[in-house]
Amino acid sequence: MDKNIIWAGADDGNVQITQDGGKTWKNVTANFIGLPKNTWCYHIEASNFAKGSAYAVFDGHTNNDVNTYVFKTTDFGTTWTSIVTADIDGFARCIQEDYVNEKLLFLGTEKGLYITVDGGKNWSKFENEMPSVAVMHLDLHKKTNDLVMATHGRGIIILDDVSILRQITNDVIASDVYFFKTKPFAKVENSSFGGTSSELEFVGPNPSTSVQIIYYLKKRNTFGKIEMEIQDMNGSKIVSLPVSNKKGINIVTWDFNEKGPK
Image (cartoon, rainbow, N blue to C red):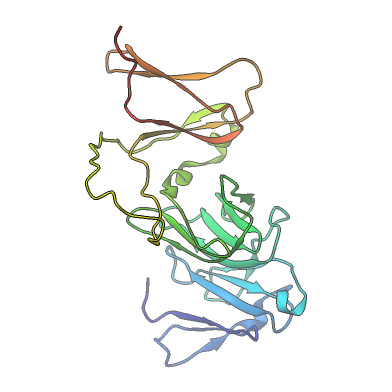
């Protein structure tokens, strides 16, 4: 937000800030309450919403301290507030603030990825095929909204388009069923031309070109089979799709196939 505001954290626990492009610096290390002295400041994330706001993550595992230390300031480091809750398991490595919703935060820990939708009052571990692996660094792609994670032992992991999480509120969580708003999908005609890449190429798969219908279930459905019906503009049935009955966020994909005529 301001090129003259620069944060610096050191492995001896020192945290400093300059507001004039480096001409003068202020040491704010003494303002952290409950942080053991000389704990490594592993990452500082400047906020996208206010000049005086930032997040600081500390790692003390080299001193046999595996507690989680994550703080937030809104006044250029004069005061810091811990945003750690008992939901987090494992010492923290890095934090990423969303570019649209300031209450949406992603935290990389020694045991995986944690997400909060209320600014750190409550955290949830992300477990949708995400291993409990050390997340060393996070970055959110502004154009595609993909969350890119550098891990220790599992290479680079990318969560495609996390923008759906911006819609989660307390009202959504309290709903029995909620369908998230998604962008329109277009049919894609694929060709086999050029499909000669092998397992030796260091690449990952492209995002799915199928329609993604994303919904939230407050509770797991334990009685009977549930399915989703796709209709045209006139309300006529096109196809029925099997859906998950699991609690939480679920995704149904449709590849535009329809029931064949008899």
